[in-house]
Each structure stands twice: as structure tokens, then as C-alpha cells.
Length: 147
Length: 173
Image: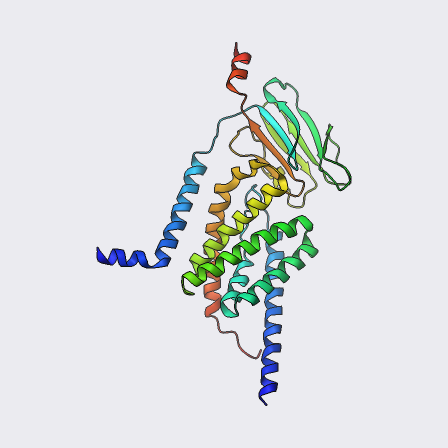
């Protein structure tokens, strides 16, 4: 027992234990992530909300192009697919969810993310400061839709 | 001639640090060519941290800071943009600060623990940076993935620099 307490005084055991606890906590958070689906798609660029779409009322796929803010212009959305010379992300919003189909960013991580329909994990495009999140309709809205 | 040897020692040290910075840059370039491991931005092996840790242990704090700074500056000019410079600086320096602290607490032993803390704080620093740049709290949804990835990759880079430190680099090639 005394050996156990002696060990506790050693900083490496405390630090290794901290790391293990943090890692386990992360795993628990990952496994308990919200995997349910939502239908409110929010498109944010550089902190400004550019658009909100309700996937439950979408019957045909919608394509939009998000142009991030430049030094002179603020960010905006174009309807349809418009790959441009500058920076852009083309987003497809369908009844099933939302995905980025094309982007000018170097790694293309946002296109790798695939289709999302859950509030658990968003799609981010760091170079273009684009953030796509899915939310649930609030309870009262759901009631209004169901009944 | 003591003056002469002193000077040649200084030159040798500068050249070695330059070589290490170049090596770190090369590792960084190689790593950026690898296909992305996961769709979450910021999850990558972080192999250039091996060189940063090596510099910290073999030369000291100031040398590690210099090599890290030079590597980030040149890599951002060559492969990146002003925004990637901010991300790299935030990640690189929060990792190095915690590694210096951790190395002092652990009295220079258990480099893998130091490396893990470095990886963890690298990703934490970049996450806070992403929150400020993106202006959206939604980035924090990535926190558990980034923290876990940081600990695992940091463990690996810490072990790698531990074994690198065991290698005796010859004085003359």
C-alpha cells in the first residue's frame, strides 16, 4: 500500500493517468455522439449565417455555391453550380442530407466528409471558413409538422 | 587556439540546426502529400514534431523554438497561405510550450508522455484557433476526435524522438 502511494508521487504516473482519463473520456464522447438525424441545414461562412434549408420539404436536389469572403466582399451564396476562379464550395442539399460535392481547397477534406444528416458532426472547410451544420427542428416545430 | 575551436563549435551548431530545420521541412512536405486520414481537419501524423522534440532535448528551448519557427514560416510560404501560418503557429507553439513544461516536470524522462501532451495541446491550440477564425462554435464538435488523435500521434512522435536521441550522430560525415 505504501508503495502505491510512493508511486503516486511520481509525476509520470499522474501525467500518464491524466492522458488515459482524457483518452477514455474522448472515446466515451465519440461513442455517445448524436447519431440521430436532423433536417435543418445551416450554412455558415466566417461566422455569418448565409442560409438555412429544411431537408424534410426538399424533393429535388438543390445545388448551391458558397463564395467565401474576400478583402473587399463578404461571403455569399449562388444558386446552382458555379465553379469559379476564386474560392468556392459547391454544396448539394437533398432530402437525405447535405454534402460538399466540389471545392477549390487543397486537401478537399470537406468533400471527403460525404453526406451528413446528423447534428453530431458538422462539415468544415477551414481554408474557405465554411461550416455546415445540421440541426433538429425544435419540438414545437415538429408538432406543427406532424399534426 | 581556444577562440578557433569555440567559433567552429558555433558554426557546427548553426549548421546542424539548419539541417534539422530542413529535415523538419522535408518531413512536413512529405506528410502534406499523404492522403487525408480522416475527413476532420487537423488529424494528421504530426511527424515534424519528432524533430522539434529532438531539438528540445539535444540543444535546448531556444534552439527548438528557432527550428520550429523557421519550419513553420518556410512551409507556409512554400505550401500554404497566411491562414495556414496562423494555424501552424497556434498548434506548433502550444505544443512546444507544453512539451517544455512537461519535460521539466518529468525531469527529461518519459519522452512519450511529453510527446502525447504535445500532440494534445497542438490540436487543442488549433481548435481554439479554428473557433476564432471560423467564428463558429460548431467546430468544437470535433474536440474528442482531435484530442484523441493528438494523444495517439504524440505518443508515436515522442517514442520516435526517444529512439532518434539514442542514435549517435557522427561528428564528421
